[in-house]
Structures are given as structure tokens and as C-alpha cells.
Length: 257
Image (cartoon, rainbow, N blue to C red; front, side, top):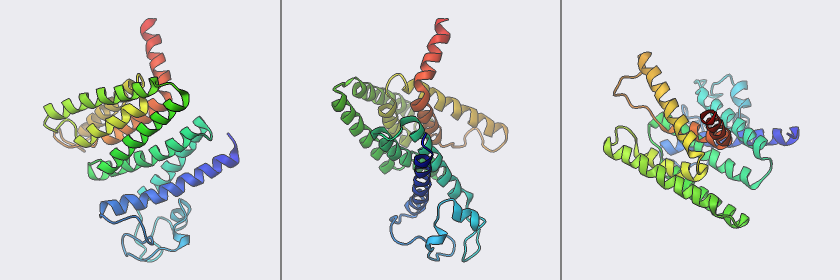
């Protein structure tokens, strides 16, 4: 991997992460993500030297320059996570149309991950954006390659997964699955296709069950407590996208021998 390009991609990623922090904060308070940035605590307008991704947080020791109030470490983590995921995607795909697609997808996935953890909801605009973008990408790819099998696999996976999650939501009266998750899996099916959707779902449910049981044992959650499932779906989705084929092959090899 070219070191110069990798550095540019990482810097681009943490810059997008900084913008994501702004979008997350302003979307929650129903404010458009435009205009000058300001401190959430004292509302003082921030200067350019306060807005350098990652480095400003470190140099300011995690505090606002003006009111000295502590800045949540979540801001730093979102920037680093975005930079790392963008860099990882680049290491897998190189400079390509797929990389541009992944950058857009990762933007919305990180948004959903953080927002669902905070507010226990997946906003419709993020779900529908992912669905439309993925459907257009699959259509573009199919036309370019003159091969519609990928498009068919994507739509089949999306519809089958949606029906499964919708039934789970319906029969548990929304207690077993939020409807935001039901919408999200339409994207998940389009993004992964078949058979990669299978390890994606398996990993999601396995992680959700493991973390849920661990929190109950530790006394952090009760049996009836809510636990956002979106982050687990996102982790399962990304693992399956990058390693799904190897996971399926490993499973088939184990079962055959």
C-alpha cells in the first residue's frame, strides 16, 4: 500500500469523522449541519485551530479552549474510527469506484452506529440513503459487467432478510426488534448479497446475544432492558463484506470434512 496515498486517505477519513461529529450533534437537536462550528457547552464559535481532527483534541487535552469544559472522548473516537475504516477499505479495494461507494456507506454506517447507541433509534434518512445508494451501485455494476446475477442476489437477500425481520418485529410486537432495524436489513441484503448475508446475520445475532448476556450478568442491564441492535448489525455487515466469502468457505470445508 502506497504510504503517501494511505496517509491522504487517513487524513481524509478523520476529516470526514470530524464532520460526522457535527452531523450527529446537530441532527439530535434538529439543527442543520451548516454554519460555523461551536462548543456544545458554552456555544463559543470555534476557530480553525480548534477544528483540526484528532490533533486539536489531543493538544487541548480534551477540553474546550474557551470554557475549559471537558469534551467527550467520543468525538476523538469517531474521528479515529472513520480514518481507520477508510484506510482499511482503501487497503482492500485500492483506488476504485468500489472505494468511493464504501466511503459513502461507511459515513452512514458510523452515523447509525453512534446515533443508535445514543438514542436507540435508526433515523429513516440514513436507512433510505443506504438503500438507494446500494441499489444504484448494484444496478451500475450489473450494467457495467453485463451480469445481473449480483443485482438479483442483492434483491433476493434484501427481501428475504426484510421478511424475516418484519415477522420478528410483528410477532414480538416490536419488543424483539425495532422497525429501524427492519429497514436497515434491506440495505444489508443489498450490500452483502447471498450467501454473505448469512454470516453477516449470524455474527450480528451472536454479538448481540453475547453482549446482552454479559451486561445482564454484570448487572448493567435487566432482562427487560432495551439494547440497540443496530451496532451489532453494522459490525456483522462489515465483517461479512470483507471476510464473508472466507467465512462461508471455512464453514463449508468444516461441514464437508
